[in-house]
Amino acid sequence: MSTTLLNIVLADDDEDDRMLFAEAIEEIAIRTKLSLFNHGQELMDYLILPNVVLPSLIFLDLNMPIKNGMECLKEIRSNPNLKDLCVAIYSTSSSEKDIEETFLNGANIYVNKPNNFSKLREVVEKVLQLNWQYHTSNLNKDTFLFRI
Amino acid sequence: MEIKLFFKYDFDILCKTFIKEHLDALDVSYAINSVNEVVMKDNLQEEKYKTLSEALKKYGIEILTDKKSTLIERIKQAIDDMLNDDKNKHLKLSSYLSDTLNYSYTYLSTIFSENTYTSIENYTILRKVDLAKAFMCNTNLTLTEIAYRLNYSSVAHLSGQFKKTTGLTPSAFQNIMKKKKDYNLQ
View 1 (cartoon, rainbow over the protein chains, first blue to last red):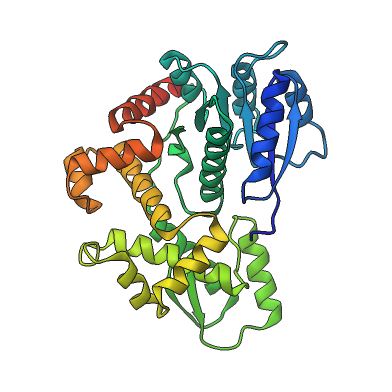
View 2: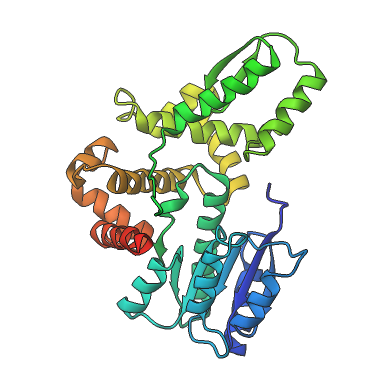
C-alpha cells in the first residue's frame, strides 16, 4: 500500500510557488510523483492526452494567464472522463465569494497558500492524507468538501 | 423534457444484495458475515474464484489477498459498526476494536498508521464528520439529534470537531450543499 506512487499535478503560473510546492511534497511521508504546469491550458492539454495516467489529485491556482483555475475546474467537471477527479484549489485569495464559487463548481478542497514553508508542508500533507482516505475508504464523495 | 431523479442509498443493503446475487450465480455455499466479509463453506474452485473476481472488479470491488489490507478494512468496518450501533457507540473505541478483532490495540493502531498515513483516532473523527455530513444532507435531523446519534457529548463538541476537520462550520457546509444542489438543477 505504502509503495504505491500517488500521481499529483499542480497548475500554477508562479515559478517560486511551483518550486516551493515541489520541495514541500518531497518532504512528506506519502510517496508521490508530481507533474507541474505553468498555466491552465497546459494542464488541460495534458489531461486529455490519449494515454494519460489520470492524477489522483489536482492542485489548481485560481489566477493564471491563458486559462485560469476556475475555467479548468468547470472544464474538468463537465468532461465525462475527468469529472470524478479530486480537485484542490490552491490560491492566495481568501475571499468568501471565490471560495464559495469554487465549491459550487465542484472543488473538493480549498487551500489558502500558506506564507511560510513549514506551514506549506503541513497543509500539503493534510490534503494528501484526506485525498488518500477518500480514495481508500468508504467516505461519501458527494460531500468531499474541505477548507484548509 | 428531462427529468432528474434523486436517490438515497443504503450502503449495507446494497453491498450485501449485490454480493449475494454474484455468489448465488456461482452456485457455491457461503455465509455473508458483514459488508466486507464472506465465508466460503467449501473450497472455492480456481475457475469460480476467477469469475467472481473479474465480475466484481467492474464495480470497483476488490477481493483482498494481502493480510494487512484485510485487517485495515476490518478495522474500518468495525469502526462503522460501532458508530452505527446504539448499544455499542458509548464504548471506548480502543477496547471495542481489540475485543471485536482479537488483537491488541497497540498492534492494530501500529498497522493502521503504517499503512494509511493516519491514526485510527483521526480516521474515526473523519468518518464521524463524514456521517454527520450525510445526516445533514439526507435527513431533516437537527444538529442536536445528529450530535446525539454520533455520540458527541454536545452540539458544541460536534460543531467544534466539524469546523476543525473540514474548515467549515456546519451551517456554512449546509449552505454550500444547498446552493450546490440548486446550482446543479439550473
